[in-house]
Every structure is written in structure tokens, then in C-alpha cells.
Image (cartoon, rainbow, N blue to C red; front, side, top):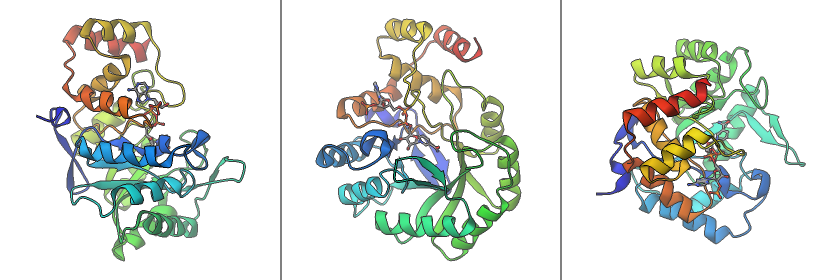
Amino acid sequence: MDSITQPGTYRLGDRQVRRIGYGAMQLAGPGVFGPPRDPEAARRVLREAVAGGVNHIDTSDFYGPHLTNRLIRDALSPYPDDLVIVTKVGARRGEDASWLPAFSPAEIVQAVHDNLRNLGLSAMEVVNLRCMFAVHGPAEGSVAPQLEALAGLQRQGLVRHIGLSNATPRQVAEARGICAIACVQNLYNLAHRDDDALIDELARDGIAYVPFFPLGGFQPLQSAALASVAEEVGATAMQVALAWLLRRSPNILLIPGTSSPAHLRENLDAGALVLPAGAMARLDGIGRG
Ligand SMILES: NC(=O)c1ccc[n+]([C@@H]2O[C@H](COP(=O)([O-])OP(=O)(O)OC[C@H]3O[C@@H](n4cnc5c(N)ncnc54)[C@H](OP(=O)(O)O)[C@@H]3O)[C@@H](O)[C@H]2O)c1
């Protein structure tokens, strides 16, 4: 049995995807800017992810920019029928690699067209609105104009499902009053637990929650409790961090990012890891400490 079938699947829009997917952000060059050192190696990681059972890939046209989507198209198109590619819109890159808002309704529409062209798709399965009231974290502000722009593209058949990213609970509530929300993609991991209540609320309503930085992102998770559980269960710390997320709530879909085939395999194998109740309790304590 493929190890990643073990944690099962969850609904994303109207598709069932495996709970361990893949985040493509690490495939671009340093700082998520410019081409990777070895583009063929990047394409190989994508092919190995799909061969390993991944059917949910998270990307954006602002990775590279544009280059990551083109790598995905080159590596995987024509796409397998069951593959769900999720993108984000709302930001753009400056010439100095900075992350800037591109959050007007017109920019949102343009970004969806850019994603479609660079991925070689006629419709996006899921587009997340990446809230950009503050660049690097959630901040309040109405998302109605941007969601109305996405809903217009949905009526044209260019976007099948809409999600939110970097969103506050209030923005999620506002969005759910405007259109159906397929998923929420926010910063969450063992050490960053701000969304605990939101995850439970979304789980009750059958909406996927997709944590970004599941391994800590640019600053990999480090904790004595994590290291000791990893030793006890005979796994790596990163595998334990992923297994904890899988067990945290059934609506969590993972998108760990890696440019390394060895790390990819390790992350996929985390689906088979069983965490005893005592280990879960110690891990739970990390984010509450
Ligand atoms: N919505 C948003 O605002 C937002 C923001 C950030 C990210 N994202 C999405 O979320 C995805 C995941 O986030 P992320 O990639 O930034 O962070 P992450 O998955 O938490 O961690 C990625 C880092 O961990 C390393 N890594 C991966 N697997 C490992 C393993 N088994 N052992 C040791 N190191 C490992 C990677 O390096 P190697 O390449 O060397 O493996 C990379 O440095 C992204 O790919 C992107 O699709 C969304």
C-alpha cells in the first residue's frame, strides 16, 4: 500500500484529495525569486511527488515569479485527471524580490489569467485570495471587492472554487457570506497555533484547512519535545511535525515544501507514522508553552 493513502483523503471543493500534498514554493531560486539552480531537478521532484501519490499541489504565479508555474506545466502537463492544482492571487514581486500587494479587483483578475496561461490550464480548480492588508501576516480589512472579482471569474468558468489565505477569522466569516469557501490556507504548525478555534469551526462545516509553513517555513521547527518524540517513535522531527498536523484535525491537508527528493519521500512517509497519545500530549504542549 502506498504510504500516503494511509491518512486518507479530504474534500477540497468538490474533489477528494490525499491528505499529504505538495507545496511548490521551494522550487524557485533563492528567496523564491528567479530560476532554480537545476531546473531539471525541480521538475524531477514534481514528477516524483505525483508518482508518490500526491494529487494536491499548491503554487502561485508569484513564486519565481511565473517560473514555478512553468516548471509545473513542463513537468506534469498533460496533467493527471485526479491532480488538483491550487493557486493564490493577491501579491506580486518587486524587481528586488520584495513581496508587494496586487490586491485590486483588476489585479486579481489579471493574476488568474497569468496563472492559467503559465500553468497551461483552461480553468483553475481552486484560487485562494491571499489577503494583503499586511504583507507578512493577517490584518483586518474587507475582502468583498476581491471575492466579487473571483466570483465573476467563477461565473465565466475560469475558477471552479474559491479559498482564502492569510485571513483572519473575521475575513473568513465575511467571505463565507459572499461565496462558498473551499479552503483556508494560513500559517499554522506545532509552534504557531493561533488558528486552533478556526480549524475546529471549519472542520465542523467540512471545509479544508491547509497550513502553510507546516515545518516552520524559512525557520525550521526546533524544540526539545519534538526531538525527543522523534527519537522515541523512530522518525525525523519533520515527520513528527507532519504526523501531528494530520492527527490534529481531519480537515487538515498538508502541503510541505521541498526541493529535495529525499525530503519529499520522508514527508510522504510521515503519513504512516502513528503517534501514541502520550506523544500527542507532549507535542500539544509545544504551542501552548
Ligand atoms: N499562503 C501563503 O501565504 C503561503 C506562504 C508560504 C508558503 N505557502 C505554501 O505552503 C507551502 C509550504 O510552506 P514552505 O515550503 O514555505 O515551508 P515548510 O513546508 O514549512 O518548510 C519548507 C522548508 O523545510 C525544508 N524541508 C522540507 N521537508 C523537509 C524534511 N523532510 N526534512 C528537513 N527539511 C525539510 C525545505 O528545505 P528543502 O528544500 O531542503 O527540503 C524548506 O527549507 C509552500 O510550498 C507554499 O506552497 C503559502
